[in-house]
Amino acid sequence: MSDDLYARHKAVLPDWLALYYERPIELTHGEGRHVWDADGHRYLDFFGGILTTMTAHALPEVTKAVGEQAARIIHSSTLYLDRPMVELAERVAELSGIPDPRVFFTTSGTEANDTALLLATTLRRSNQILAMRNSYHGRSFSTVGITGNRSWSPTSLSPLQTLYVHGGVRGRGPYAGLSDAEFIKGCVADLEDVLGQAYGQVAALIAEPVQGVGGFTSPPDGLFAAFREVLDRHGILWISDEVQTGWGRTGDHFWGWQAHAASGPPDVLTFAKGIGNGMSIGGVVARAEVMNCLDANSISTFGGSPVTMAAGLANLTYLLEHDLQGNARRVGGLLMDRLRAAAAGLDVVREVRGRGLMIGIEMVEPGSGRPSPEAASAVLEVAREEGLLLGKGGGHNSSVLRVAPPLSLTAAEAEEGAEILATALRAAQAMADGSAEVAGEVGRSAR
Image (tube, rainbow, N blue to C red; front, side, top):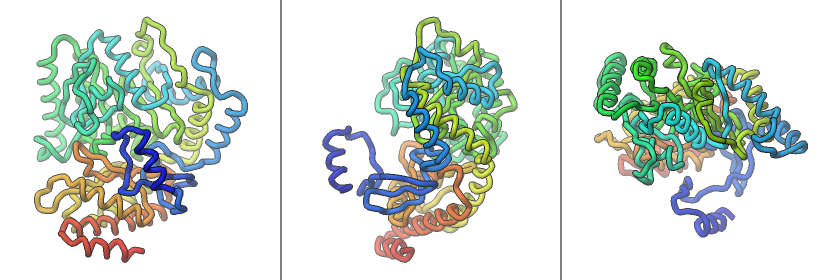
């Protein structure tokens, strides 16, 4: 059945619509932290639909809210008062930390970042944007133009002039050997130098507090606070892209920007993914001065849909009432410890990094230290065979395993997933050592 569906997929969908695994799988249903494929195989889900199934699969509170709202009215658009949209906007505004906030809902993170760019460039009357190297902000024409990751930039054409600065990747690049304080100082000096080369005023800096597609890399705490001091002198807005870092996933903070809060909150915050627990919700929070700067009509046909807003409200309520941020901190810490122990002594693993339930495992060629997409793919395949789903990312080469389970992950599930990952990492080490036969035995021994 899966092979037949794969053939039909290739016949009607774009070649660039990537699929995981040598033999792609069709997921048919899920419950809690587990999903099942069309062949009846059960998997522990450590990727959550690209960090989107934030709380749990088939969460009863969310499915109930969706069903009840769908039975009343599914759609009306933003041209009419929408009670679920107002109620969710009130909750998000309060949680954002931004003074005098206004909220605009979209259908995706790409569209949210697109909106943030529209606001910043309109307010500042400039198409110049500062972005981070190794970044990813979406697949629209404008967001591709500010994405500092070659693998996700299919065109160099853009309506924006983008200036890239250092700071998103701590462990590689010209500043990797510096202390955290020296790293921040060097990146601030680089920012000042870039601004000295810009013509006129720059509209905004957009940055992910933890780079998602880039491989869950992050700067030392306080970098964006130091950047903010420079930005404020020039009147430049700070857009925090919280599409992957929001809602407590990092454990230590509800928003990623709070690790850099010494100079205050961002001017604009974008969100998406987890808030809908699989429903299509994105959005922007901005100071009223910024949000209200548009002097032409603007609506969203599907942003703020009653059904998706009802799902978001139920999901956010569940997350807060069950302290899933705290769970991400506790269980994420346990998982990180187990994965670092599993990687110890394996020179195919360069680093295990991350925060909360947002963990990256960087795979390299033993000896050279060069990124190894092959090793990452090998781990992905073995993990799937053993019943664990992971993601990939990392710079221009997809050599980082992305571990991002639903935030309700239990300690027992973390232990189970770590054990499977340990098996897969040993198999990748055996492959890197040139023994495919040994790698196969490693995988089979766990079964």
